[in-house]
Length: 236
Image 1 (cartoon, one colour):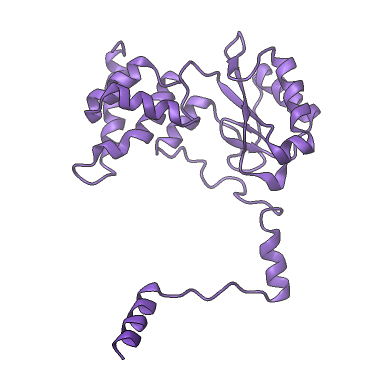
Image 2 (cartoon, rainbow, N blue to C red):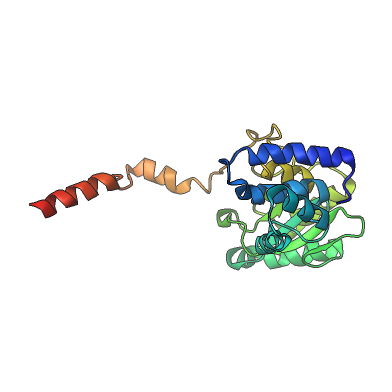
């Protein structure tokens, strides 16, 4: 590993906190947050990072690489300061996602999974942002930018390139950089977890309609009680 002594010491201290969240003997369960920790330092799952995780968790490098290539949030080459993901799946595409992608790709000058020359922006097509009620959606470092248009997405790129703050629709008031958000995903709060709404009006529409009309969901059934009643019936 080629980490400086200071960086290595910070990684070791953070890794110890992550591992401590799991029961003794289950350190391997820390693998996913550990990979986010590596990305918070290197900007991707680097060879040095794989070596560190392998040594720390006593796992084969091949197993770590297999996990890193399975989940799309883990990147295998350096990622820009801002990972801009444009959803072009079904609903977002119908609502204008394809046009947004064309505009953003042309403006940055790169395609999917590519990074601008200045290292500021990495673009990727996303299959689904799990926010269909706000289609079309763009995510920047996993933060939501809802109801986008080609013009608003292009303006977002202008803000990134000019070094201006980005303000997500939901979540923190200002979108953090990729590395900063990766540290949050590793499990270290950044103090912004209570900022902004977590769910907007569109997401809560069904709940409001149900309240207005007096609708309620099915009553929860205690499975253990049901099983006990069934055994009693059989005994009879």
